[in-house]
Length: 122
Image (cartoon, rainbow, N blue to C red; front, side, top):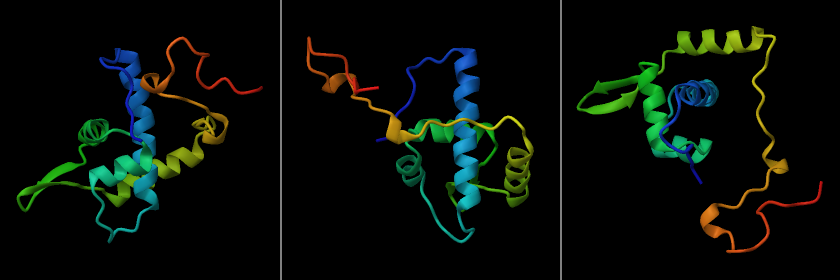
């Protein structure tokens, strides 16, 4: 289920999340074939990032264009290749969590007065 950090974000929080969202989106686009049509809501379901965060990130990358009466995501292959090659070249890799080690229950689904959510064995 797509989610988003609590808003408003601090300046540092915005930079951090925007960096993460950019990485996720550009990596996803690099894995796609150029002839596929994909909608923002599909990207949201694939990444777990809310649509408004996807749109704001794409706008910051200047990847939203108005074409034939509608807004489209405009992905330049040169830009993607440059980004992906820079990621491979960087010594400091982006660290992402492996979902199998995370346990989380949304606040709304927690039982009142019960034990803390996600308390598995170590």
